[in-house]
Image (cartoon, rainbow, N blue to C red; front, side, top):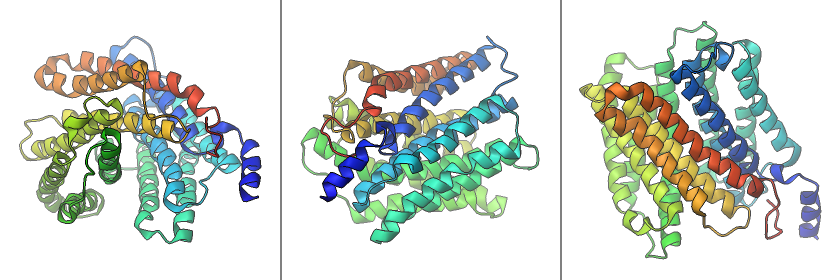
Amino acid sequence: MMQIIDQAKEQRIPPLFRLAFRPFFLAGSGFSVLAMLLWAMFWSGSINLSGLMYGNPVWWHSHEMLFGFTGAIIVGFLLTAVQNWTGNPGVRGWRLASIFACWLAARAGLLFASPSYLWMGLDLLWMPLAAYFLAKPIVVRKQWNNLFFSPLILLLTYLNARFHLIAMGVSSDTVHNVSMMVIVTISVIVLVVGGRVIPFFTWRGTQTEQITRVTWLERCSLLPCWLLLACVLLPIPDAVRQTALPGLLIATGVFNLIRFARWRTWSTLKVPLLWLLHFAYLFMILGLLLLAVNQMFGSISYSVALHFLTVGGIGAMILAMIARVSLGHTGRPLKIRRWMVAGFVLIVLSALTRTLLLMLFPAMAISGYVLSALLWAGAFGIFTVVYSPILTRPRVDGRPG
């Protein structure tokens, strides 16, 4: 009877709002296409954007790619995953639609309006709502090992507020400093989640021997992540931070590289849903190590090191994860076709253009920015088109979700 009642309720919910991955993966990806096309236009000088992008294209690009895009994907993923962790239904229906509406309205406001407390307040609302609906089933089931994700979402909300205060000119913070805090926070989320799922996905997807966890290595991989996060967030003296930061970046990178070496990357080369995950995790590690080089010697530009993390690490990881999760949670086989393989290649090329190309040919900076943005737009544009029918229709197996 419970299943019949649940199924009847499910049929009254539009498919787009039956689980959080549906609206946030689809709209987040589509929004990133728009954001990157505007960014390419800004650098090419092909159009006057003075009335758009919150009056500050550099601020807007940094903020919207971190919060508007990446934040949406993180929230969509976690609010979906919590159903698997706890066995309790994830947020859906009008509650999910309300969270999504706040996100969507904030994106429109920050694109077309001027900085104000109104848009700041609206943009600070959707993440705490998501954190609440994420924490509720975890607390009910007493799965305390997963509860830390909710405080991380609240931490992102706090950093979002600091970003907005910069835009309104009432803070002495800089985009450079606050974006570094946000990127490290997101990187920790990616490393923690990636370390959990990539070995499992690799084992199941390649039908090879299970990849076992080595306790000391897992601890050594995660401990410097949390110390790194503390180092960039806590109000410690600058001299202490400048001394500790490179060492923590190196420790995080090296131990995660050792852990990554056990994941049998070679076995994934014929499975696109897997090799892009491995590529992204490797770029996360390289980004951390290159940031350390930048901090110590300055021989690698901060921008290049940062985009190893953001485009090659976070961006590629997101595309690989949402492609896989969207198939699995709609009852479809975990296989992608040629168009999505092309999308995966485009995101790899976007990362390589924004990093290695500019390392080798720094004089091509502007052209590199434009080309990388267009390649990103192509990659996520393909996802948006290919997955729109998947994410807006019921599961093919008739189950809820």
